[in-house]
Length: 261
Image (tube, rainbow, N blue to C red; front, side):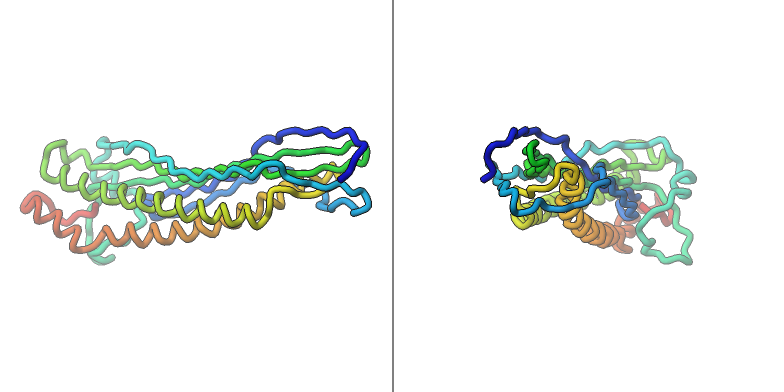
């Protein structure tokens, strides 16, 4: 234990990371990750001779929660307009059939995380301990259902299309619930692995030290984000089956041509 120094403790600003996935029918995945951390210092532990020991007084708090936005409905687009939207499922009728789009579910799935740190600085020897204080992860879903304006509320086709699109919404909700649990357990493992106390480091190297800790969490989130997106794609595609589309036609027999939903 190092004695005889002026010790300064401060809570660091949370550093955030975000992955955003956009998709029509929730199936096109555009991911963006942002690390708000400087990296202009070298990562170099302090020599043992200084005898500064970094010991965490508290266990890092871990929170992984789903955030489910309310379903929005857009009834302002025509079938012609919806046909011009790129969709992410493959038509069960195949590429040689001219199928019109009468409904869409546009889903945004987003994973965010924030990490909180505490610093303990020994001014006399220019050494700092870094403590991981918290890891907060949220999984967001923000769905919008589009139904062609040619089908007014209360019509057979409106009700059938709405029922179908809500199956896509429900599948995203199930995916969010599943991966909230998976990512929660993964965060517990990685935090136990990297530990709560880090250092001591030269005080000018703290940014790099924090970045290394955050990168460990970042890699785990990227792994499960990719896994979740692939499972999401498969499960959403399974909803858009030939049998599903034909069942809509049977519900509204004689009231529609061959459409995609």
